[in-house]
Image (cartoon, rainbow, N blue to C red; front, side, top):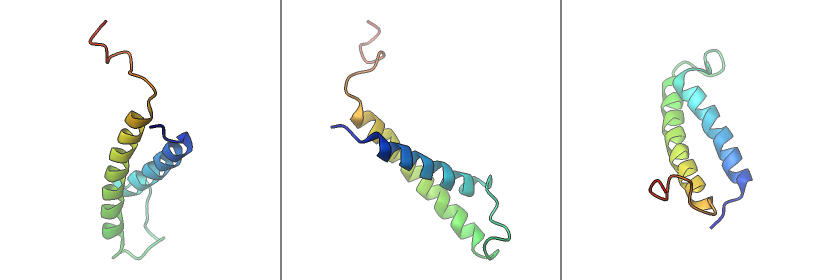
Length: 74
């Protein structure tokens, strides 16, 4: 099964953005009410984690052949 590289690309971009928000690299101060920021950053970290898992699975599924380390050192 092959996955369109555009899907992986855009999911990677989204993952980078949400992890930037969740980790505090992107400041939400003065953009959103202060009461919302902890909830939004927590959700961004969760979404970033899930997207990271999905990206790993997509890259593994779309690989057409085994990599150089799959042969047991041959």
